[in-house]
Image (cartoon, rainbow, N blue to C red):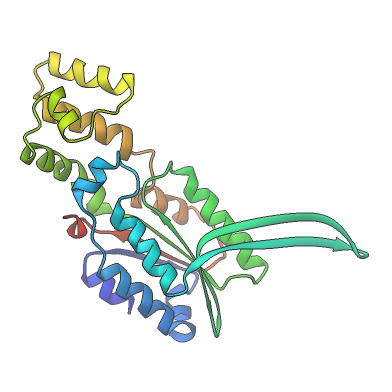
Length: 242
């Protein structure tokens, strides 16, 4: 089933026998996830209009998963000694699928600061050690999307006729920080066309190397973060951008 994602351009990486576990114990649940991801797309207009945050499509992916019983769940862990509670910790996961043969935990990291990967992987590690989950899944921007996103944003902005501050207001993009405004002004003063100056600043502030994308996730997992929890990592490809 995961081969369908690979053939569609998704980055797919598994750790600690995750692929065998999914095929044997969670075929229906895996098929649900693959089906949702293959039908998923993201509008550049919503990415830019939303200031780089989750687009309407990303929220719809969350809603669609929730409709298939991949729902937010708070795992509560309590330590009790001689009938007296000594410690209590909770672990919230955005999408949890309880199946007949175990439990899957999934996080979508569209565009957070990259330490969120550490949080997710360490959370999965703890929950797996407690036999609370069978496997952890992370979905993030894939390698091809990260490489193509800046140019795709630039093409969209150029197509919208972006050429000045007035055009930003027309497109509903006028709400920016003073630092972002200064960055655009500095680039324009050096001869960079306004659309390109805005794109550079927007991309660097919203989708730079310190945000959640495939390379940052892959680096952590190859260092062993999250071990020994079985893991499925999925990178969204550039082909889903519209």
